[in-house]
Image (cartoon, rainbow, N blue to C red; front, side, top):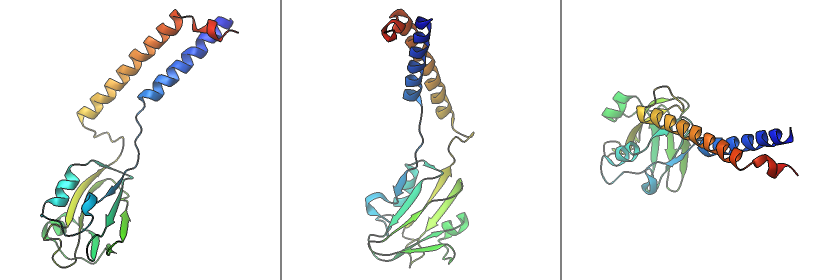
Length: 176
């Protein structure tokens, strides 16, 4: 009976360790918009679009707008207002030299952000992005396939651990 109980304890510990090793954790990420450039008139009109297109954003991620040169604002607008650089007064957050503004969108979907100071938007101080919800059923096939790979790996590792623990008589080690 003690041998069987020891084997069960070894199996539980082994499975718990393998599960912990293969579990994916999604963490909130803080992005500094524009990286080291910050939130300012960019060197080219595609700078912020390129910056945003190289990242995948999820619900809960936080965006920090650091004003590195002059006075700017952060305005969330519609897609049409974004494309036309329409000067709107709703949802305006002002940031000045050496100040920062943090923004955490509350829902998944498309976002359009511009600066309405002077002609900053026309000069490229704008970006759009899609915020995805974590665990969304619309995840792409590669993500689903990688989840299946992790599950298969977990099954193989669990079977290997059970074989190892059974072969080497793990219960006798725990039996004082």
